[in-house]
Amino acid sequence: MLLFFKKYRLFLTIVIVLSAIILFLFYSALKPKKTLPIYNPSMVNPELADSTVQYISKYHTISDFSFTNQNGKIITQKDYEDKIYVADFFFTTCGSICPKMTINLLEIQKAIINNPKVMLLSHTVFPETDTISVLKNYAIKNGVIDSKWNLVTGDKKQIYTMARKSYLAVKLGNPNELYDMIHTENFVLVDLKRRVRGFYDGTKKEDIQRLIEDINFLCSE
Image 1 (tube, rainbow, N blue to C red):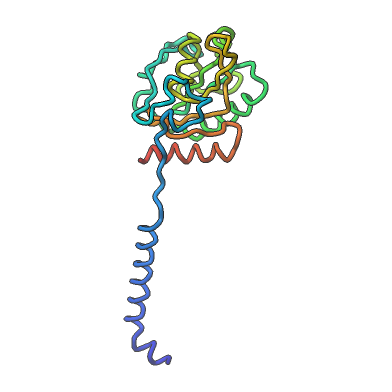
Image 2 (cartoon, helix red, strand yellow):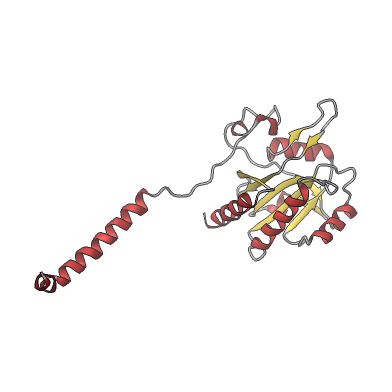
């Protein structure tokens, strides 16, 4: 037997190597490739999308916008052109889920700090109290890097419209109060074409890790 193996050692080695390559190719072909869905209003919880857009099943994108950030600068969709970004809704005096969300956004900020293709965008749902100076103090207190992360305020109607018609991420508040919003823990991932590619629980570490992985996936897509 030993003599047999010595005689056919080269042949057996080639067979083993070829078998390994074939098995690897089969595995690669059968293994499902990672994909991210493209979300439209008809796909999400109706509580999070305005009734006027709930029927839309394709071609949904983030609308144009104009808000003011923590430095008093006007921020529009142009500032996020050719960018992948994470959007959320918050308010500076929130004592429940916002602190956790801010900590987790800081983790994302750290992960994307050297990636020029990725940014963050946080909208206040209480623009009447979250003024530019309030947002600036909040940014300084929490270590927000201006070049990566805009905290924006502006017209409440426009914020409401963006939250419910574009990002599909905020619940309706008191129906008797115009443009009342209840922000959620949702982080929204937006791709280079202004399409919604994912929703993540901003209070959960495992979702944050998944979000960072999905950001990296979009960057290499």
